[in-house]
Image (cartoon, rainbow, N blue to C red; front, side):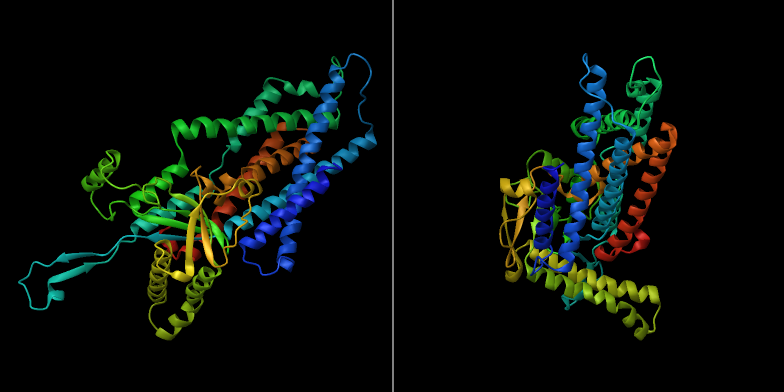
Length: 463
């Protein structure tokens, strides 16, 4: 603890520094950065307490039971209550860290860039000297954007582990297979201390959680289904890119521009497009020429944020404009929102296409130090960076999936504390399940509401 405690402060300082750079803070000693530092310290310190308590309790429990000669002794009552205080403090720290993580997640800004062009059709009536009268421009349909937005909202609460499966397996191991007997201090007796019960329960909970996590990544996502790579494919088919800002100047970009130029087509032609891609008869889906890579971690220049905020600021004036127009509230509001959406879509398309000199970017690989510390070391105040994401799932950090440890560790501590207080594994499992469901539902609601505000997609079309 004496070593990991100071290291936690150093790591929290690094994370706060990274947050300040990604947020475009001119000074890293302002109030918001200090608050973020304290919150990051709570998170890291909670992890330190969890690791130390788990390692210490498991070592004392199993070393005491396996010793042949009297070397280890169990803790006395006062020492056990000190451990209980640390356990409760760890639960509180993990809860604060979880709330901080969820708030950070729901406040991110997401926009769906539609690359589709309006189509021109020839009218069947007799030709006119005015060419414009012989042609009609069909507007771009919005259903593709609504489809992608709904899929994005559904990804928000996808977890790397299944809470119900986790609790069922833990209950089966501890009660049905009676692994709780390992918490008994001496064989043949029924006495178990708080420390030994904590050691056994936290050990099995974390082992089951990590095994489920590993099997999900190594087997389920590779063999059965991978919702995140499926979403990338959907973006390419729908001709829609996604840019999401987790910080004012930092986020993720999914390049979904169709290599066929359009997506408003029939089933037969869409199948023909996919056939061409399979036979390598067209270009690649990647942002760079000759590349398949579609996912990037982005760091944007200050000029981008200025223009972005300028466009989004028009949303605040929508209500005033609706009252002045005197027309139907919903119709007038949607009309104004559609105009702002078109401006934002045009701006972001020009940014990706390098059409704005003040908001340009370069594509590069992330260095080892940047990947290790989760920090950007280059100056992006004038020219942004698009960092290649070879894993293709880096954008999962925008969802619960990428923040699995915050949820798993909190649920583990809640399960243990509930068990130690109520002395019932079944009741502890019920409490964890209910709390987890409530947190997921609340997160989903706030995430969707913020998605509507940021993407300018009509909330009536989000399921």
